[in-house]
Amino acid sequence: MQRTAQHFLLFILLFALSSCSNKFKMPRESIGESSEWAFYKYNTASGGSRPGTFSGKLDVIWENSFRNKPSGPLTISKGFLIYPGSKRKIEIFETATGLSKGYVRSKRHPQSGMIIEDSLGFFFEAPRFSRLRCVNLLNKKKIWDRKIKDATAGLIVVDSFLIVSSSEGTIYALNINTGESGWEYHSETRLAAPPSSNGDLIVQTTDGGKLLALSASDGEEVFVTELEAPVLGAAAIDDKIYLADYSGNVYALELDSGEVVWKNKLEAKFWAGPALSDGMLYLGSTDGKFYALNTDNGEIVWEFSPGDVIRSSPIVVGDYVLFGTMSGILYSLRAEDGLISSRRELAGAISFSPVSDGRHIFVATGKGELLCLGSTLETASIE
Image (cartoon, rainbow, N blue to C red; front, side, top):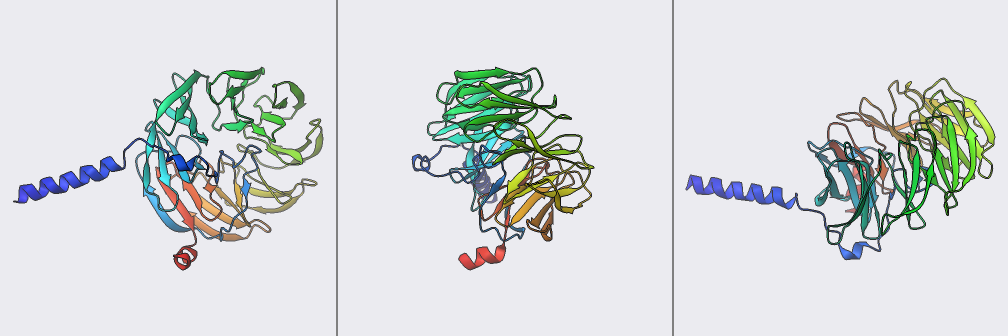
């Protein structure tokens, strides 16, 4: 009798585990749904800012802990939280509950994260044999794949073309349905950050100290701006182009010509691109400081000193700016003045930016911790 009970419990455990380990199949009705955080920095312009009702609080709504460290940036698409993991799986979760909805199998580490366009999922795998893959999420079948060497950690879609940068210096515009090149641009310098776009321009930073601006329609060079140092993070685009280089220079450039409107030299080193919202530019440094600058003139509006290395871009959600540190601390600051709204210590480094659905914040750590954060009081009152 005891052995029968043990067998029954084992069966239940195996069933529960298998139910969480199925390949992801996207419901057909999800195709028409919007994507709350479609790309690695919210939209193609890489501003890292979205409206929302986020309260500024970092109470734990739900959390998952597993042995699948993040290998690329999070995204939220079609109502699903997408987590690219080092165990060769792209895990898909329900945003409201954290329940697993399955996975997309990756043959190697999915370094770019995954984005969804209609019913197609796109992600880049590396190392050794680097491949860019397109999968039909309705039937779980591969549509196409293509060899691209060391793509950067972030993909965007502009006018039905998948825009991809590679470390070897090439920018690709690929047809999302076939993977064939619409155009390619070959630079003479390494590309460490993903591209950005306002729909007309493709803007690409380089670690050779240049900013490239290309026509989104045909890849023709519009302008090249010489900067003072390598740029390791993506540019943000609004009425100007904003970026920060490794030696501490923060720039605003003209959209049509790339001429420098203003430059502010800070005592900092920047590995990640800025976030942009309501006339303010937000960026964190590896020297343990976080800055808010006026987009009109580059002057510092406020600064905050967490005293810890910041390697990922901040995000702005509603009235709050959020960023994580390499010691695993997530900060929520009031965007207008930098005052702390909330602070939470997590297990493991935060090397990829948080994402948001406008109400909650989702963050992954280097020790395989995935959390949804917000206001528990707000959640309770709604339920």
